[in-house]
Structure formats: C-alpha cells, structure tokens
Amino acid sequence: MMERRWAGPAGGTSFGALAALCVWSVALGACSGDIDPRDPNGGGPHLPQGGSGAGSGPGAGSGPGPAVGAPGDPRIAKRIWRLSPSQFNAEVQRVLGAGAPAVSIPESAAEDGLTNIAANAVVDLGNASIFADGARSIASWAVAQRGTVSRCTDHGTDACRDSFLVWFPQAAFRRPVPQAEVDELRTLFNDLRSAYDWDYAYGGLVRAVLLSPDFLYRTELGAGSGALLTPNEIANLLAFAITDQSPDDALLQAAASGDLTDPAQREAQARRLMQKSERSWQRFFWEWLQLSTLYSQGEEVGLSPALVAQMEEEYRAFVREIVVNEGGNLRDVLSAPYTWAGPELAAHYGAQHPGGGVARVQLDPAQRGGLLTQGAWLVSHGKRGRDNVVRRGMNIYKQAMCNDISPPAGVDVQAELAKLVGPDASVREVVDARGAAPSCGGCHRVPDPVGMVFESFASTGGWQATYPNGQAVDTRVDVSGLGSFDNARAFSSALAGDLSFQRCFVQRLTQFMVGIDLGSPQMVLWTQQAHERFLQSDTSLEELVVAIVRHPAFIERRMEGAP
Image (cartoon, rainbow, N blue to C red; front, side, top):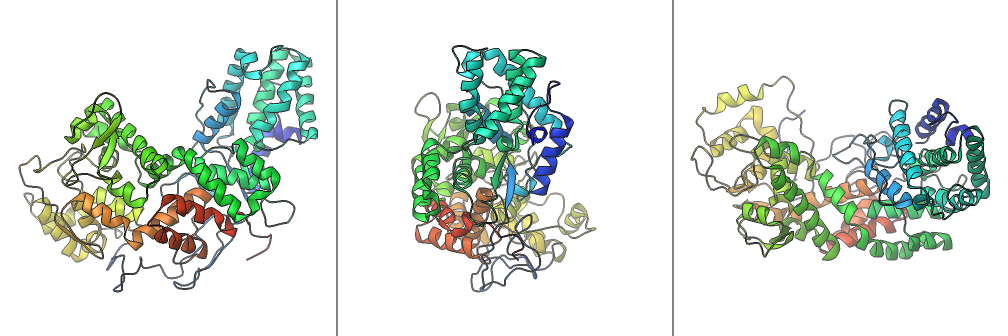
C-alpha cells in the first residue's frame, strides 16, 4: 500500500509506485446518399442500424441499443477518472494557495470534441513521469514558501508536521482521511527526515499526496458491492459536473449528513452551484463548438494577437453573463443581440463601446446575436481564402447536431468540384452545384446551406457585403426542416428551437457532465426525460442540469456482472 501511494525515499516517486498507480487506473477503470437529419414528420436524426444507445467505453455496454421509441436506461459501470489538467492545477491552488505553479500534464483524448471523458482520463506508463515532474516542481515551490503553505508559525518542527497532516491530506483527497492513512504519511515523513532533512521530508510529503490516486482521481465505486455511490463520491460528481472543481464546504456538509441520495437535495445543491458554474460552462461550449483553433486561425487570417485575445475574452464574458449571471436559456446563448467586449473588438464589429475595458455592447440585431456570430467561433472555423462555407457548416452539422459525415473513400474532392464549376464561379454557384451533384450532394446538401448563412462574416469575424474579389455575398438559404433564412442570427435562433439540435445539446452536455456518451435522448430514458424538462422550461440551462442530476442513474452504478 505504501509503495502504491507514497513517494520513494530517493527524491521523487519510485517507478514501482508509478507503475502501480497506472495499473490501478487501468484496472478500474462513409457518406453517401441522403443524409438529411430529419424524417418527413420532422423527427430527429436517422440512427444507424444496430447503433448502441449507451455509447462506448466503460459502462456503455455492447451490442445493439434499443430501437427508437423504446428508450433504454443504462447505468454506468463503476469507474474512476483522472483530473483534467485544468482541474489538477485548480486543485493544487485550492489546497496550497493561489501562488502555486501551474504545471503541464497530459490532456486526455477527446470524444466528440469533449475531453472530460472518464474512459480516457488515466495515468499510464507513457505519461507517469510527467506527473512526477510536475509534483516535484510544486513541492519545491511549497518548500520555498515555508509557513505560508504549511500554515505553520513554527515551520520546521514536529508540531508543524502534525498540524499539516491534520488538514492537507483531507483537503487534497476531498474526503475525510482515516487516522491509519495519516499515520502512513507521518511514517513516510519520518523516514525521509531521518535520511535527509526536514524540508526534504516536507517536500516528499507534498509529492506523495499530489501523486496519490486519492488526489489524481475521482472514484465512482460505491461502498462494497452496492450500486449506490458513497456520499463523498456524489458530492465530488456534483461539484465537478457543475463547477469543474471540487466540492465546497456546503456540499461536503450535505454529503456528511447523507442528504445527497435525495433527488430534491441534489436539485437544491445543483441550483446553488449554478452560481459557481462559470468555468464548467466556458469549458463545455469551448470544447463542444471546437474553439481551440482560435489562435492558430487568427494568425492564419492576419488578425493581431491582441484582437484574438479579446475574442476569447468576449467569449468567456458572454458565457459568464448569459448563463450564470442572467440565468439565460439556450436561445439566449444563440441569439442575444448584445455581448461583452473590449473597445477594439467592438470597433471590429462596427458597434459602439461605452468606454474602456470589457463592457456590455449592443449589437446590430440584423447582423449579430449569440455565440455563433462572435469572433471566437467565426475565426476558429474560418480560413484564409474566399469563403468559409464548408468549415462553418460542417462544424454545426456534425458537432452541434451530432451527425456523422465522412467523405466516400477514394474521392478526390477538388477534382470532383472542378468538374462541376469553373474557376470563376461564385460561392453561390459552387454551393448549388456541390449540393446537386451525386458525388458531393450526400455530404454537402444540408451542411453547405448552414455554412452559407454565415458568409456575411469574413474569416476575420468582421462583417462583409462583398468578397475580396468583388463578388456580392449572398446568404439566402433554405435549410431542410428549419426554413428559409438570410441572416445568421435568425438561423441561430431557429437552431435553438430545433429538436434535432436540442437533442444533441442534451446528449453532449450530459456526456460532458458524467464523462460518457449515453446516446441520443431518443434512445436513453435518462436523457429523454432531461430533454423533456428542457423543453418544458423553454430551454433553461439550469433546469436541464437539474434534470440530469436528479435522475437515479446519476448516483447509481451498474452492479458487478449486471448486463
């Protein structure tokens, strides 16, 4: 047990400890034809034959899922999952102080753009040394801070060691720590001190705790063979799902009292935590809409780094104000005709800014409204050149509407396009020809009009009435199942009310919160019921979160050997 958890005496973590940690983590834990997403009666996306309603990965099950109209209700398997890099650094600063150095640890592999995936969040032998190096860096800093971090006025004494052990492991492990574990840590400290000195032993203690599975991982194992998560596991799941950080004191108190098994109590905690949910929502929309290319694409299209930084700043302020401070709904996120921006970005949009700094800015409602008309999304899915139809249309159609598109194998896209139109064809002519052609239409007939409606925005995110070659921008489109549009804000507003889009939003938010893709709300009772409450509340984001955490599957895990 000691080797699995604690640092080796030679200055760092022993290979055996890292190997055991990795083993522990692993042990637990073509496009063709008609791809219109709606059936003639306005239903949701067509589902693949034999598709799994429970997604993939641990707890997802295997084999075909239930048919549409017969939603299943799978329980996730017992599991553990590693803190993300941002969670790791935030936890270190929460425990040791705001000045603690941020370290680079590996991001887990993304699924559907989301990195908060339990099955992929592990420490393995390929990246274990990175964690050891990071812990060593943090420990060295902690040693240099002396009593500021240890919270001792008598730093360097046995009394300081004992007082440090009272609060540090419990804060780091996000749960009460039995005396036996405290005694193990004290023994480790004493062994290191006898071989080296007090500061070295203190640094080794910090390293040991930061490399412990109890710090690096969140568990969902329940007690014994039971299916119900422990109170502290429920508290951690609630906190990380809603705030992207560890439980606060009020949530830990609710866990200690046993209240969190009551759905009404989870609802009350979820509503309270929504006031602290800024980080989680910012991370979710950033990953779901794939905004991580903002800086690279901003450089490609010639924007100044300062203006690109203001675009990210706008995005984060908008999500904070709309979702958290105003308690907005999905329609507000996609169509609010105002934003929060700095003076230079407001000028880039052709809007009036009230003064210095980031401030609320009124936008022209005929031009802009919501996340999809902001620079962060427009630039992330733009490119140097004439038009951005394919990148923007495909991002919405694939990512935001949960459709899977892959070009037919062996097709030379550019060669096929050259057969359809000449080099001087307008963007409108290219889109129309591509959608009508048998070789291209299967993949482009619906996504291209979606991208076309955003062509009033240049790749820089600025407004344009003509392309650089002088040809007029024409954004009039007919989108199957949604209607006719001539501007992006009207389209975005209609998108927020589209059932297919809403189902995808519910599916992805649940995936982000619980770390696994459960499948479409058409196929899974848990997310189907959440979607129903989402609709009844006029797409309230808070009500959707409440519906997700109230369901029994949020706190129950599949029993060993259960199908």
